[in-house]
Image (cartoon, rainbow, N blue to C red; front, top):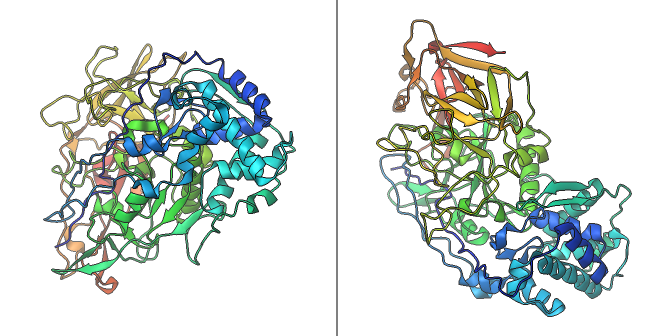
Length: 639
């Protein structure tokens, strides 16, 4: 019997760092700290700023560690913190048939013997600067000094000059990535130098303004990279990655198992058999190497196409994009999507999602989208949290990754498809787009040791949705997620949230508040003119045809019963538990293919695509995308 578990089912969280700063001094202005450290260690300030931007975008993360136990603006890594953190597993099951297989062993952190030198930079920084580990973790100025000292040390080790020319520092920058593969180190260095050449400026997570002036005439002296002696890249023929990123082939397991079972993806022939319509963004809720090992275990009931490493953006491809990975928890979407897992944990947010990761992943997604004709919008580049359950019984168990701290606006900017406004201030539909740096809504549940505690203020891409236009109004309800209860402010609960890039039809406006249609109800969010959290976004919307009080909403667009040939069981298209009523409007993403991919055996020859005549439309119905039958609705333009 065919069975599947969702990918990214491992849940863990690094404990918060002891924030005792009895001996730490308040750091100066961060821009001044970069200037002072650059001067002290004879590192070009542009190089120091560029490296820090790729590591942290100049954020301090309030002293919390990253996936590799990296701290502060310079991401100094502490092996002791890496090995001492607690880890536990909390798996979720989602059946793709009548049965489920047990969750594989949790993806534990690498053993001490596996810890690479890249996770020991704090020790070296402490030796070079005389700073304690505590200050390097919690004092931003000390952390920046440590990063500058490391760069200077790398430069000297290479035999390169302590030059004022940033181009001479290419090898030291590549070494700072911590990558063991020359391709990954080169990608990191190239992105640092691209940032220096273009310049950058932003407000950090704690409100500090930092700028890197552009250096338009910058040239890279790449001979220093060769002297690092890193492992050469291995890119076998047929790997599906752009040439500009570091990518390797680590195949997922495909193997026959006892009792006519197999694991753990399905062979296909896309796009000849079916068009790829979606790219799904996940986070691993785990670590890079252990998660990859799970993808190589045929007994593990989930798989995905690509894994992206947090520290340097290195990518491993596991499954050819022609084949179907078991990754989204919705077989209709699985059959028409590519899944990309990102190292990290939802609740840790931006401490895991590094600039190097964003850039590498964005290039991969753009490459795949252009290759397969996937629109670069939030109706087709989906988070796992945007994928609907297939039946009323599966809605509640759908996943929430990559969570509220993934910077969708920045991600689309890097893809070359920035999220723009379209229309005037009274447009009939809007796109959610709060300012990521300053938008820090309240959440709780980031600390698994204290799950009721408030999360530290963290930049997020979401807005809260309320029943009335006031801050103390209750959150709107999601009867699928919470059949008998209220929506939660938990970081793991998106029942009453709208996300950056998602488009919704406007239901009403009152002062600084805007109401949208959301899961069959009016949902209000704060949208002041002085600091808007949404922008106009005119486009097509759907509403029930005249005479229809309600129309059903579906989690998959399967064919009608008459389309199924003999030997392939009919897959019932069961409405979800939500109500789409007359007078409500929802934004239209386009027509959805009416298809079912029958793949229940080990052999590709047995796999079939069933196509029907019923026309479905994809809509943004709540936090997740859903489907309606075209015959049930009328399409209009929201001017």
